[in-house]
Image 1 (cartoon, rainbow, N blue to C red):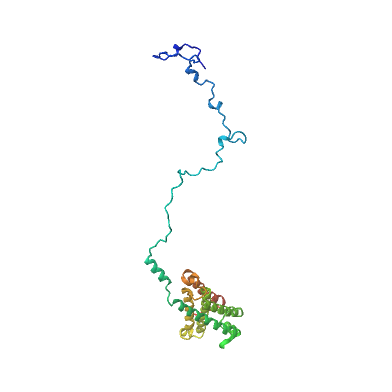
Image 2 (cartoon, rainbow, N blue to C red):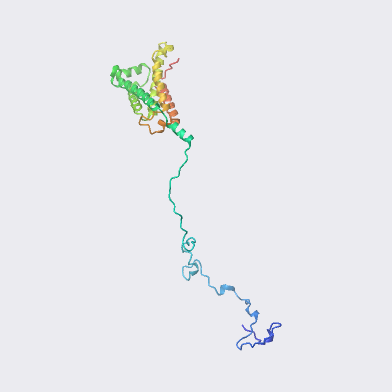
Length: 280
């Protein structure tokens, strides 16, 4: 918009001299004409903003939304060359204290050989006595004689107990010799031997010779029962099928559990199938 007045003096600054001729096509402009009108709506009247939910139309304003992320900034000329590197083994200082503990843990000496002898002795003894009961070998009573002796000792269900005790005794002996499932086998042998000790004590009580029970051959049964308990606590050693299992190297909690099961099983069999009091 141009001013209605074309008088140069009306718009001349104070102290301004109009020496130069003004171009013929020039016109004076009123600064107030550049102010926005009362009805001016701002940039929204002149700028079209695309809708973000529009599926058609110009989407150039959002064209970068689906573009992949830019790569990290790289200096011109590419990355700096790396110095040559060669992988070499690093020397680690040895801890003498730890080495001594490891050596002490693996140093068993003749312990495994001693456990093998103990296992074979106990397992072989169980097998021999089981075969005596099963087949009457080596002067054994056989199944019938063992059945009769169980009835005389006061055991109930002697017919079933004869086969269960004979089979269990042979199986426990074989497992002990092989060093397989040693804690379970030794616990079964311990339960059987506890019943043998209680039966001997019961017979001595009935014959009024309880004071002689330690010297009349019952001590033999006590020693064998103690050997079974020792195998449970020490483990079978490395010379057996259990050599790779934990109870062969470092028996602890499982051995105590097996020992308690063997003792509790022997007492439970005696109470349920016999019920006699060997001490009174």
